[in-house]
Length: 341
Image (tube, rainbow, N blue to C red; front, side, top):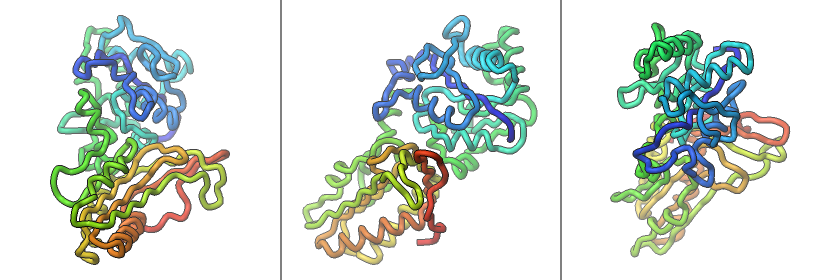
């Protein structure tokens, strides 16, 4: 769609299952509320928080506080309209979406048509990870005034309910999953597989390089080769790079990474364990973007297989990077067409 779009981050939930305020829960030192706020702010024309002010954004609270997400959405949108004098659609994100990125917000904003855009996850619509049309925001206000508290009937005819397959292909289901329990948060960090000799994964948090080396080390392997690709402060024709944002088609990316490992095993049958881990989301200079670890009985196979794997990952896996530097931002230069392994 074209035209300005507002952003709303909701931080006022009770978080009973989490056992603490989800909005202030930190991942890599950044509170969840701020992570979501940054994703919205990068794309929308004006973003505010509905809650106690934990995101660093201007905030407003629903009345009475804690009266539910319908009341929170209405309060936030009314405040945006009051500030600007204009009724515009809004991307609404709850604060418990730790993998949310500017790419997710841009995808919601960019879906064609003027109707609301609501991803479907595990068979259920996700209204708190959605683009709300003006008509549905007006409908929400009327329903709230009539005593309604549920979000079930807020979206009108023509709503774009995006299937799981479409979401997966467009941005990856991981980006629209929320966290409700400490176990959900723990799963954000990659952990070695319980069995098997291959470990491939995408993560929105720091890559566990030391854990990968430890996992790959076997008694029958005298060589463990590790490659770690980090964010540098420049790119082709771009000095002063400050941030990279990696976007991936999750299921195809993981499938391609597994295919790369399979090809490495076919070429070097003696290799032991192989780990291929890649970051998604926002990374600063010096942060690790990709890790490849290969163990083998002898160093020649480990070096050869490791070099093949990182080259093939860069050339065949559907992961893209967006660069931000001192006076601009754009997709990364020097990208290669994605080819078959």
